[in-house]
Image 1 (cartoon, one colour):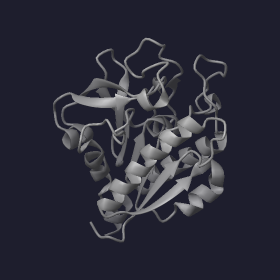
Image 2 (cartoon, helix red, strand yellow):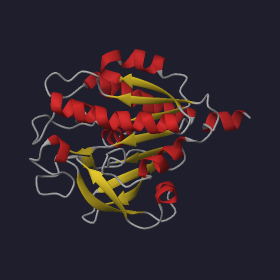
Image 3 (cartoon, rainbow, N blue to C red):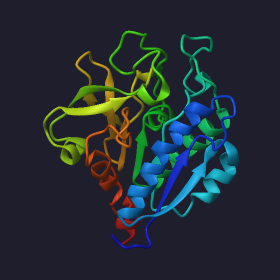
Image 4 (cartoon, rainbow, N blue to C red):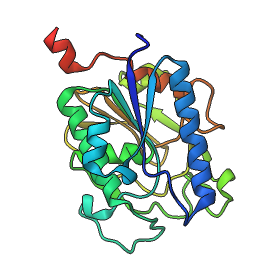
Length: 248
């Protein structure tokens, strides 16, 4: 991969005075993603969606060759036709939601490779008209409910669809993942295919039928994730954008 290729890593915000412990853990996850991407040869631009606003986010990421949308807070229900007041509801950053949704739609239009992690996976779905399961309950395998933030990740298996892009990256066998989510993809957005499921049937991975867009509900960037998992998923971004191929 040419060293000049640029990767936009988009987070929700750089400021969470209301929840410093959560913020500190998010910084660990983002930092690990950026460090590995740089090691793999990407020129990384770290961008905070809520701190910029939608227009500035689009402008700052306009020249990116690929995009990663990271995890974070729940998407505001207004973007998928849901109601507020649900169990486990987090703080919302509608400006980040709007901006990240716009980034997904632009990536789809341009054929820009994009990876969504956790919230980013859900952003892909909502951007394309999908909906969200607002709360999976407190007895699921997706999160260590009530645990300190540094112990919140839960390990569980995900079955990948044979022949999918993600199974090509991670292998045909069930993968062990690290998760910490209370929401999930419900109705799929236009053009999206569910290619990873938990044993209880929840959607854990999606990809677009024709564009280089992939989402995983789990955290491959967590320190407890299997070695090589994040690198394999970042490899999905090392593709020439569809629009560039068409113009060649």
